[in-house]
Length: 543
Image: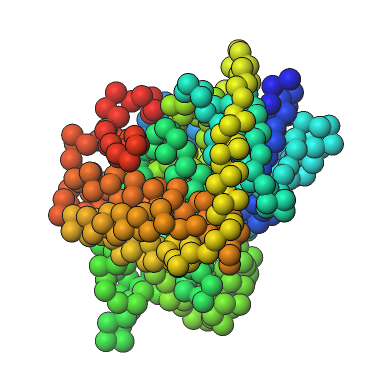
């Protein structure tokens, strides 16, 4: 029987595991937390899918909106397959128990999100991700009982087992047993989420730290479009994190404004017209940044009945964390790092440049180009997981498992050696300092000076990381993951420095216009400390 190891138990990982099980292929799903604590649960807004029973919208419009939002560097073939699959995916989710909000006629409700020609975002109130995770967990348990899915919680990724350009599984770290062990498999599927912890306090989970992508990059996997980092325009500051005020609020009619001498200025509507509040996220974020003053989001005019019926979670969020009653007053908002269009470079089969190494979800770069449309992330996670499973199942020959005993012994010896000594440099302090630098140097607006400074700062942290042995205040994972995280941070900065234009979520004040000669994905590779960027003009990964 074929076997796959899946890293991550969010929507992409669960979707892949279920799809493999339906094909009679066993999977081991490894993650540090249960699915209920995954990043996917935080996805509030909804999932895009065109209604096929008539109306002005169409799959072709969904394709065009996705390509335009990504500023035409996502491949048409990839985007077409994603958008065509969307309606059937929503139907499948319903059959599995996802409870979508419905209109009076019984059809699934759809709301407008930024960059859409027509409303096409299906939703479950403002907790769509939570509903989907719940449905997938229940489906997953059925296959666990059949022995086709094995979930291993409190388990961290250490590295891939790669020989001669072929992946043979993963080296995993058991938190409870403090041990490294190999898990051999015919395929390794990465569904580890984005890179939130690179930037410290964001809208996402700090468990998504980018280490898996960084380590695989060091092991030869290519990364793509790292410079494209989406700032969500409407987030609320709290002591713990940036709390997302879902685009659903603006989809229901919410308006952004700032005050000037006691007068409300609806600056987006003044500049872009009626749909100003639902422009793509990169544009809205830059407009808020350029306003240079506190911006507010107002939904109070909708009335308490509509608010409590359609966006009750946003009401509860604002009331709980800031004591703000959105039925009566506006909420102060500002942009925050939210989503990463860049990640592991995969082809249409979701396979990387390393044979039998796949990726799906936010950690895989394929569908979003330079900027993701709201509502496309959940769609890409589900479809990407299913597509990776389809590719694993379609691979004719199984892997000849090499012995990695010496590699496992060397890495175990290194880990145990680290346990025996203290470091002058606490790991979390270095991570916090690096995150602060990245926030400053990879902001909404960038330039050569800031990016070069960022690279120098990360080089300094990498030099310190080489001298660290052990920080007893944290789990061993945080020690061995530091170099991979910092290496990924440097790759992001190098990619941003190399792209001499402004496109989508990558805006450079020193190159403020799009450059037609750079209308392609960036691909970065690593070779013994050398970072090399090229542009995928032939569409190796996109077509």
